Length: 64
Image (cartoon, rainbow, N blue to C red; front, side):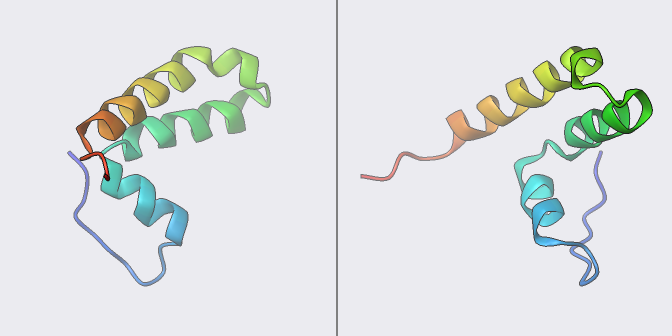
């Protein structure tokens, strides 16, 4: 569960990611990269974020 905050101090990127429902997956990617300093060590986290974003994008109505 994600906090339902829309804090003025939160940047636009965080607000956009929070609205997708993929905030936790994004945080996991950022933390992994900060800890390892190597994106290649974060493939599991990147894949989870990618799948979450794909699910979010597939749930969006297609503009005509």
